[in-house]
Length: 469
Image 1 (spheres, rainbow, N blue to C red):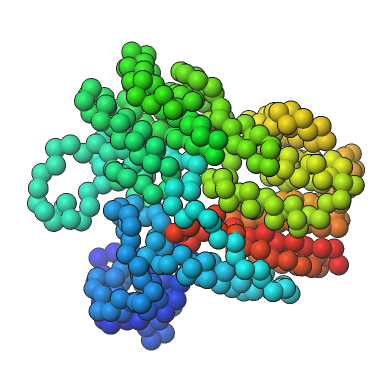
Image 2: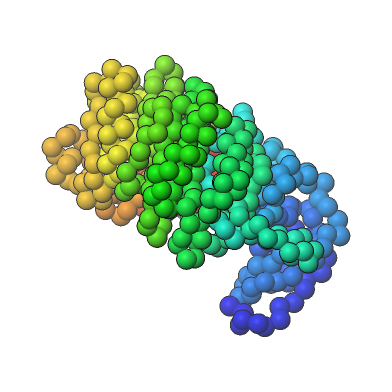
């Protein structure tokens, strides 16, 4: 790595040649590979290097000589600052093409397994306002844009309600409008900020851990329900009631109005009590007539409509006839388990988060599903040979692990269980490819189906069907 303070060179008139990971693009200069954000293949740019190693470097575009014919105008006023939606300057068709390429490259380079032809990626019908959940942070020292700093103006009001700047825990960009969630999200968030400023409510100081207002979480659903969770740092019943009463009167469409007191040093709420101020303490999602209850701590795929396409692919790959014992690993709130249950003899779901397991059981009860069992525990500890011997060898395993992929012990137990088919859902094709390599001696990859859950980002979901050799 370059030494701090060392002057790094300016690379002039460099051609952006491809797309890399994390939403960055690639420039090849002599023997150096340079990763640059917020540019697209075909741009010709001057690059100021910001970090350099022997074989690669990072940099930022400081001047555009020629814009790529692929490039489109960013539609969000916060583009390039908040760090999200980095690919909105690419036409959606090109985004899909690069995501397909990313899946192919990772499975080939890391997986090193024999692959069938990869199916064409399933695009999202909605490319804007597709998320059902967003979290925003209060800060009393908002992030200043380069334009504001260069202006030389003094800004007395530094309060912000928005997104963290990537890699900076204490820097928050004030968000005026966001294209990710239904516009009701903007109206609620901006009203909260306006009311807080008018009533002199203190915004959170992330470094000194002080202030009244800490976070908000807004959840929406395809049923039209809205959940708002306001997280306070200070337990002040009078001001809490004042704000929540105002929001209740201003937004009668909020069906679940909740709040949390969080005095911890981190923003996680899984271990905190949730208080119901008005309405229900849950909202519903509906899929093929099934109702899924979503609480403030529940995990649910954040693109509801595309989740339905994803689950249909999983069910199709599983090839169930009604006679199979199915294991659903990392089941979360049991969405996939309950979705496939009508086509299986029995579905056993395993999940580490206890609240999620309760949600999964509730969702089975809500839908009159009687052939599911859900267990709470760490996957690598709970799923072992004794568990298999007690509950039966699965005919099909569905697995949807977190980004880190599956633990080695989980893979060993899957190999011991010897299911006929494995359907592997992943939000990180790199770790999925690593796990496919570990399963390669006993299982053959039969189908690969990428799915785009997050338009305008580099993220891609991938579903793989493996069959026993």
